[in-house]
Length: 257
Ligand SMILES: [Zn+2]
Image 1 (tube, rainbow, N blue to C red):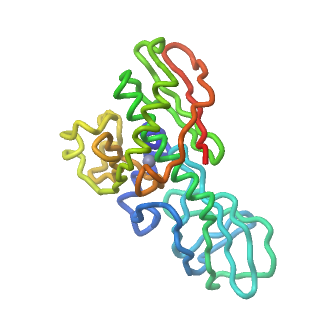
Image 2: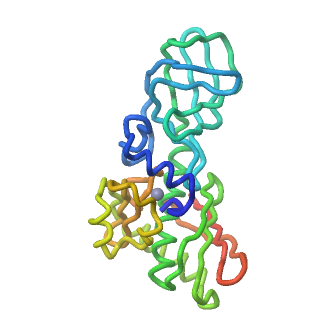
């Protein structure tokens, strides 16, 4: 679950209906994306737009991919990707020259992508199990390469037990649960008890949702990138729990390779 209530997230999910634009949405697992060839459709001083792109654009609490674009005449590093339909690939370290129409190869930084897939799938587990144990609701998240944080809202946050949460999350990691992607209709999700988020809060104009299911413990609409099986996630360590006001706690974790 990449924060199901965030504005960016909603906009990204809206574009599930435009899957020809956000091509990463058609792929699961999100790990080790292949290099792809495409051509430059436009550019300005800051970013390049491509005819098509499999890069993940920042959204839903997950940062964007990094990548290298190149052909025989030029190369550049992509350090940020943004956008809802046509993606803006923000570049730096350009060498050589390019123009609209040039064919290029895009190589996504798979080490970074794979780590974000592990962190993101771990976030689904924490959100699901905190909900299962204490009826906690995930109200925010920021996924990172080194550390990730999730904001949980409790009816009674005093009952929260970080070491218990860490233990049950690591159990599910060890249980090697399959992580599956589907496209499901909203009526189908409303009838599914494994959907923990309130679908009434989701944009009402979307009928078909990209969903991520983990074993038989969680189903969540999500536009992010995930691993294929929880066994790919290293053991998780909760590193900090911080008060975020009445009823809310910020839980931070890292993955120990
Ligand atoms: Zn997700």
